[in-house]
Image (cartoon, rainbow, N blue to C red; front, side):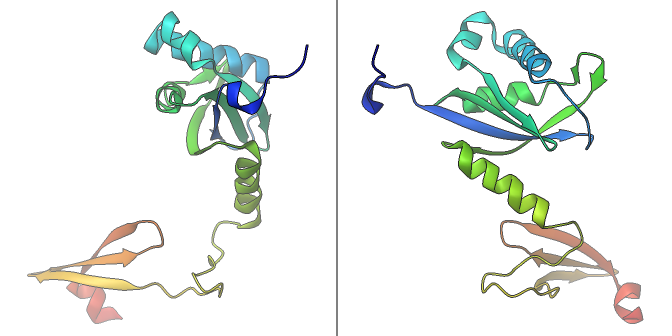
Length: 166
C-alpha cells in the first residue's frame, strides 16, 4: 500500500506543554491515559474521537501532544485539567502550539539555553539588563509604572518612599 499524498493527509497540530513540578518522571503511556480521561470527561467520547490526541514524546520536563488541526483549543483546555498521572501529582502548562514538532523542539532547546536570571537578548541581539518603563499616573502616595516587555507589559507599583530612597 502506498502512502497518501500530502493533499489527502489529515492536518495535525502539536502542543508543547511543560510538566510541573520540574524533574517529574512520567511514562508516555500513562500520560496518554490521563489526557484521554481528561478529554472524555470534559468533552465526551465523540469529541475525544474527533480530537485524536496522542502523546508523541515526553522528555526533559516537556511533553509534545498531537491532535487534529482545529481541535488544539479543546485539547489545551483538557490539558489544563490534568492533575495526576497514576499516583504522581503534576500539572501541564501549555507553552506553544505549532504545525511541526521540530519548531517545538527548537523552543525546548532555547528555553534550556536561557537559564533563569540571565539577561534576555534584545531586538538588536545585544544582552542588556536595562528595562524600559513608562510612568502612567501619579496620584497621592502611589505611582503606577508599566515595564515594557517584548511580548507583554508588567504593571509595577512604586510608592513615594521607594522613589525617595533611590
